[in-house]
Length: 259
Ligand code: CAA
Image 1 (cartoon, rainbow, N blue to C red):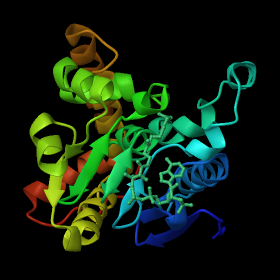
Image 2: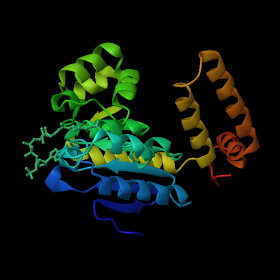
Image 3: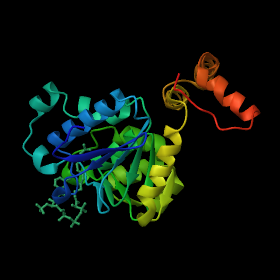
Image 4: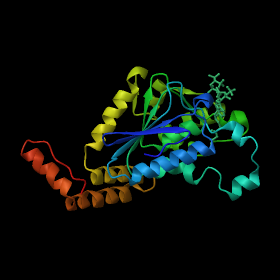
């Protein structure tokens, strides 16, 4: 497995685990880290033995934002011509396999945006979410204004983005930003348990389920329901669907082959 300067990667069974690892900068996202992260996601996407991914940081910080020191010297023509913060900065959002963000500590600015690019967020009870870019004279740049609004609604998104206040884990769960709040000491164990469950299932069914949920953000209800129904019907063409239903009827565990 490749090694990287700013992240740690490992596989545990069918789960690919990526740990952001720039502790001195609270995992601030600079171009090198983002290049590492995108490459690691590419590698796990291409590895047939990996069926689910987990993205995490440290107990103090998932990521305290885009790297402000790196950003401070940039100018508009260069950010525009290079389409700064497109491409690898959005790689987690284009991942086809499921990816869970396990967030402890600060998930601010680009850190919150990175967590929201994942399929779901499991938060430790010390997690803090925020989009404080206005404090720096800028605004969210990796989807924060769009994904946060879809997750928590206009009222709370405006409150957070315009006042730069943080949301704690409990409020984030109440507001629909995170799927579960977990005591810090159990965050990785619980997250890995969920990831292992996903990895034990049929990959094509999981990919279709993820695609169907994600389409709900882009389609009308009628078109979304039609899209879901077509995918549902197409599961009748995969061996794992037959195996799953037969196993239920025969009161045994299914043996999925990801076909
Ligand atoms: N960029 C670069 N370095 C950062 C950083 C960031 N986003 N966040 C923290 N660091 C660095 C600090 O500069 C400090 O480095 P030094 O020891 O070399 O001074 C180190 O990490 C530890 O940070 P603090 O001493 O500040 O730690 P703290 O516990 O006192 O405070 C914090 C923690 C409240 C998270 C504070 O670090 C902070 O406010 N960070 C910035 C948060 C922020 O504004 N994020 C948004 C960035 S803009 C963005 O992300 C744009 C976008 O949408 C794409």
